[in-house]
Amino acid sequence: MSQELSDFRSEIDALDDKILELINKRLQVCLEVGNFKSLHGIAVRDSKREAELIDKLLENNKGPCPPDILEKIYRILIETAVSLENDQSN
Image 1: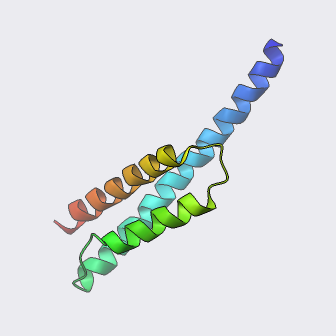
Image 2: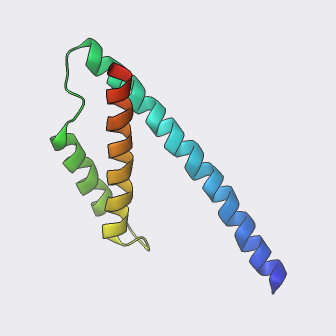
């Protein structure tokens, strides 16, 4: 039984490593977007784009992640990206 638990934990650890890598890749692209926006005089925040993203993700979510939790996760990612973009442009 403990070997099975160890296998599950190893799988979770590998997934966490991938999630971390993807989060950082996503934020790196957001920094590039922020640079583009800054160069072209475009506002960092785009509420319409944010709403479209959240709506699309919630529509595509097949679970088991509850929709409210998925939205919270992405709101945190969006806020982090906006903060990084703002810091970069200052």
